[in-house]
Image (cartoon, rainbow, N blue to C red; front, side):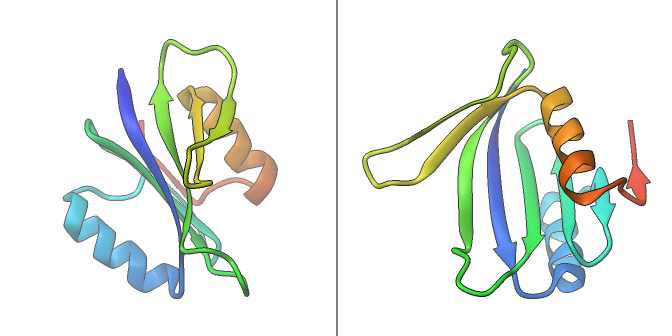
Length: 106
């Protein structure tokens, strides 16, 4: 499966979790309190991070693709980072960067 990936920086993680849960009609797959949340629906892979000073709102775009072996990244003509990765890489990255999430659904 291949789905679009969007990574955003947000002011309030808790308010954003409530907002995007409603918009996507799905609970987050993983939440690291105060730091990170991830949704994976048939259409989109959306991650949000608590905003840090001077961070862009749009962190990067990309594709989650079950068929790729390694993560790749490049930039489009506008300088926006695009990455391609598989779900295992993303799950391992969440653990490496944020620690274990408090919620995790299959």
